Length: 291
View 1 (cartoon, rainbow, N blue to C red):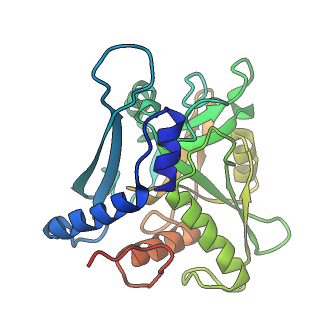
View 2: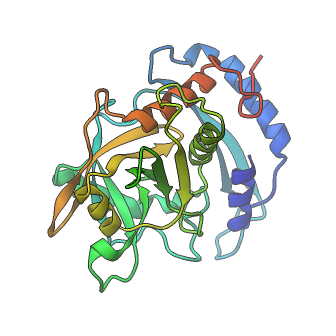
């Protein structure tokens, strides 16, 4: 709810009672509980929405708004299912920019992405890896931001041992502070302090870095056989494996293949998060029981 109220303030929409909304969502889920899918990889998607409804035309903030919630049963986010998706790195089109709205959950952030994603699909890629930087430079020098509408992570093996580095772009105003992003970072950092992610060896330390990196960095890690995993995370996809990253004028960056798509780190995160969502593991601070 904090992210929704923050986003509403960014576009000058009226404030609302977040606690009351949460209680109403609980009641709505209970009423529509028969629509909760039971199949693996499926879920009931909940989307609170706030739109301005000022009864006049003009370039000015709306002092009235409608708040409503959409529920929808959903299946796997990508048609490829658990198979790793291929991303096309794009730098000539801008998804986000410093001082813009990409750090907020707003509908206006999505339409500009549709045309590049359509072109990527024609080239055999399922999604776009958005880059940011000086358009006059080589794309490999541009910063990685997000994968489609998902936060993006890469897993890199350290040169001096079995420790792993996990990189994700920082919250610099161009990156959405996603709930799943925060959940993954929290779980990985907790594992480093007290090993708890089942499919990761307790003897391997995982170091999380919220820092900028470029396609060139990924090329380097790949050429050194240290780029072990790449994945996108988000509300609907949870954790989605990336199998390759394409960049026009350069060879694709191929990510190691794993049975079921996700590598050890991505699989550990997906399993733990879905176990929490399905109530198999109790996480009071993360969950709201509808009863």
